[in-house]
Length: 188
Image 1 (tube, rainbow, N blue to C red):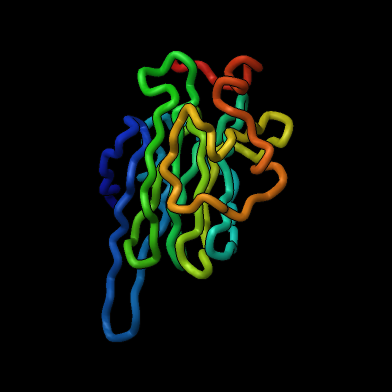
Image 2 (cartoon, one colour):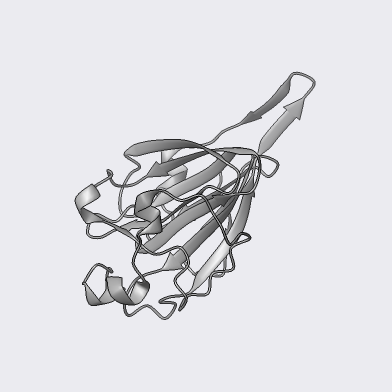
């Protein structure tokens, strides 16, 4: 399997195109093969954890990151569609504080590679979305930070003004607060 990587607005964040084989019986996709995914930019080790979420329209999950013990994430919308957002939170990075949004959908066989050092979250655009993602580090609640989804200094263009949020996500901190608290990783 050869990975078909596309650049995004953020240098190390990549869109992975999957090959889907369709015939009269249905379809088939190879979703992961360790030897081809081991060279993604910024990857800090093998994938060690798989996560899955089911969410309804307007649910916003994120923007989360861990430091230390940064998680790289390989994200895919299995069913439905999501507005997937990544923010560079690496202090000293030329792209520090920059964000991008990409729509991931069951209709496009793609994965999004989000390396450690980026905050990640998504908003559900369809009635229901099933999202799966592989992680390169175990979930570590003591090292997790939550970047406020609507940080006015970032100006993320979310397609809703009233998302459904968890208490944690509704109480996220601004990038400035996280930086001042020493929660952001350094750019290497």
